[in-house]
Image (cartoon, rainbow, N blue to C red; front, side):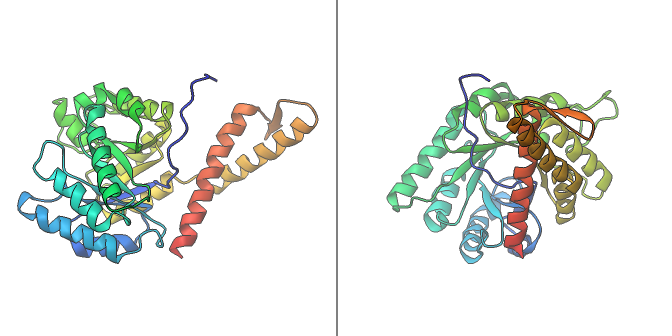
Length: 317
């Protein structure tokens, strides 16, 4: 192991992340009662320009009226981009009026580390002005060619940064990819055209201790397509995926939850290695397969996810 190590960012259960337009209060209430681990209240793409101000008011009201943490959920707000006239009011108004209730701000179209530095500075100023000490994290959407070209530097900037999300639709547009499907595969491409980008983002996350989250799959009527997309993301190391419709939430929870047999095997791996250690051995066997210290690290990852799921589920009960 390298002597240079980056401590993991704050642990949050993020198997499913439901996107909810800030312009739709009725959807926000339903999201609070649903099964998503994470809910982000959207002020950006899902809100038309004439509705921006009202959406911001709706979000502030929902943050103050709903006890998201008591419901076992993390609540985030996706602000507008730094290149818009809405972003500064999003940060200032949301944090001044509900800064003790929001968990993270999701920053879209992050292209360089300085984009996050600006948001960090604004959070620091509002928190100091109001004497608040609660921790507010940031999360970055990697959804442009510039953002992907700088993804390692963005991840390394840390500060309040907790997670990176892959925004496949804007990423496709930024790269002029020949597709109009959000997250789907192009039949003209021999494989998964998003594999490189998602894998690169995941590596940057894991190198610098961040969570890695896959973005949307646009066809919410295609259950199998969503499952396939989520499984590819999970195989690459993502710990969750967006849901743009409530019907996608249970699918994400299913894919990113370790099966009980996997959890049981993880427990047995830890037990067998403890017994081997007591006997002066560095390796052991479970189900006829060799296990060692690397196996234990993988087992602990599974057990940590399982414990987080149980804790969140208990909170929702």
